[in-house]
Amino acid sequence: MLPTEILHEILTKTFKFSEADINKYQKQANQKNKDLETWLVEDSEIIEETKLYESAAEKMSVPFVLLKGKEIKKSVLDVIPAPLAQTHQVIAFEKDKNNINLAMLDPRNIQTIEFIHRKTGLNPIVFLTTPTDIKDALHRYHADLESNVAIQRLSEPSKTSESDLQKVAEELPIINIVNSILEHAVYEGASDIHIEPSEKEVDVRYRVDGVLKNVMTLPKNVQNGIIARVKVLAKLKIDEHMKPQDGRMKMQLRDKKLSFRVSIIPVYDGEKIVMRILHEGQKPLSLDQLGFLPEPKKIVEKAIQKPHGMILVTGPTGSGKTTTLYSILGILNQPDVNISTIEDPIEYHVKGINQSQINPQIGFTFASGLRAFLRQDPDIIMVGEIRDKETAEIAIHAAMTGHLVLSTLHTNDAPTTLPRLIDMNVPPFLIAFTANIIIAQRLVRKICEYCKKEYHLEKNEIQELSRLFDNKKIQNLFLGQKIKLTAKEKNLENITFYHGKGCRRCDNTGYKGRLGIYEVMDIDAEMAKKINEKAEANEIKDLARKKGMITMMEDGLIKSKLGITTIEEVLRVTRD
Image 1: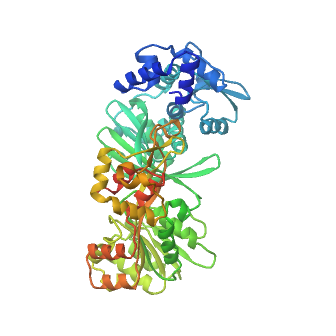
Image 2 (image 1 turned 180 degrees about the horizontal axis):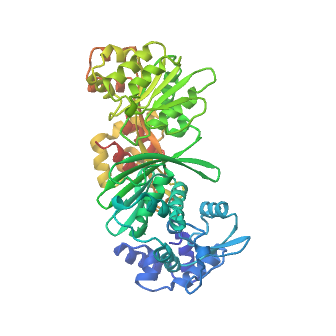
Image 3 (image 1 turned 120 degrees about the vertical axis):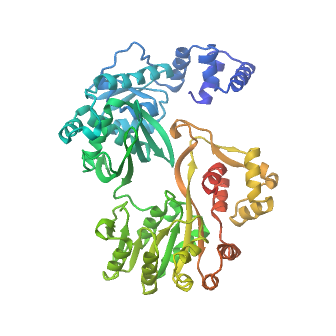
C-alpha cells in the first residue's frame, strides 16, 4: 500500500477529494475492516489503480511501468530469488551489462535495492508499478518452477538408490532452489529455516525474530531433490530416510561466513529439514546491545571480574542464553587467560577460545569433558548446559578451586535456579559459596523504528497488567529508573506506551529485531546465608526483591515505556 501521507495528498490534489470525502470513505473502509486504498481501488472501484500509481510515481519522482503484457525473460526474472521477490514485492524486468530495471511498490526501500545491487553487481533503476502487476509477475515464478524443474517424480525415498538421489541433488534447478532458500533466509535475518513436506506440496518457513512465517510453497516433485541436496551439503547419508540425522554445512555470502546446523527427521509425508543459521566470526554483542539496563549491567560487570565462582544464565530453549554467555566470554577473552568451552553444539567459533563439542556416542559428555578441562590449566570454563548431578558437582568444584565457570540451566526465573540445583542433590552450601550471579532471561521483539508510534493500552491489556502491578508500583518502578511521567500519566490507562503500526521494512509486523529482558540476582553474603539455610524459591525471591532486584516482567515494562518493545510482547514471553 502507498504511504498514508502520499495517498492523502494524491486524493486531495489529483482526485480533488475533500477532507469530508476522505473521512467518509475511511469510515466505510473501517466498517469492512479494509484499508482506505484497498477500499477505493478494489472494493468500491472509485479510483482506477493505474492512475493512482502513476500519480504516486510522479509524487515520488520515479518512473512508472506497467508490467502487464510485458515480456520478461526468465533469465532476467530469476536474477531476484522468488522468496526475495515475494517478500519485498520487487520484480526484475529488464537488464543489460550495466543496469537492471526493478519494478517495486516501495521505491524508498533502500535496503532491498542495495542488496540487489551487491548481489548482481548491476546498477538498479527503480520503477513504481501497481500491486496487481506485481502479483501477476510473481505468479510467473511458480509457473516457471512447475514447468522448468525437470525432475522426474521419484519413487518412495526408502526405495530410491543412492546414485539416483545423488544425480537429482546435482540438478541445476534443485541447486538454484536450495541456494535461493538459504540466501534469502540470511537476507531476511532468519534464525531458522523449516522445509516441511505435506501431501501435495512442500512449505518453506523462516523463523524471524522468534516467530515462524511462511515464505514460499514448492511443488511436491522437487521434494526429494531438495532433501538430497541438503544431505549432500551437510555430509549426511543420502539414502537414509528412516532415522533422524544431524549435520553442518558452510556458505559464503558476500562478506559473510555462515554455518547451517542441519536437522532432518522422518515425518508422515517424507523428511522435514530444519536449519539453524549461525554467523561465523560474528563479534559478541556488548551488554548494552543485549539490552541490560544500567543497574543490572553494573551487577553483571562486577560479577564477571571475580577470579572464581559461577555465573549461571537460565531460561527456556531459544531465550538467548548462549548469546549472553558468548558476550560475557567476549569481555573476558584476553591474551593472559586460558578459556575453554564444552558445548552441544558449538554455535560460534571465537578466536582465542578453546572450544570442544560433546559426543555422547564415544563417552565425551559435559561431565567427562569438564574433568578433562581441569587438567588443561584453565582460568575460565564455559559449560554449555548443566543437565545432571555429575556435571553440576564438577562445575561447582571447579568454581571452588579457583576457576570462573559459566553455564546455563533450564529454569523459569533466577530464584528457582537454586532449588533446581538442590533437586540434583547438590549440597546447598556448595551453591551458596560458589554462585556469583544468576541471570534469567527471555527474548522480546523490538518495535520497528520506521513505524513506531505512541498509543495507550487497551482494556484487556490494562486488566492483565493490573493483576500484576498496581498504579503505585508502576509509578515507583519508572521513578526508580529516572523515567519522568506527566501529571496526566497517574493512571495506567493514561500512560503513553509505543507500538509499531506495521510497514514494508518490518513486513507489516510492527517489529524488527530482538533483545533480552532480564532478571539479575546477585549472590552476596546475605543471600548465600539464606541459600545455605535451604530457603525456598519464594523466600529467596523476597530477599532479592528487598535488595533491589528487578524482575523480568518489570524489566520488560521499563523497556515498553522507553519505546523499545511493547507490553503485548512482554506479556507474551513472560506469561507462565
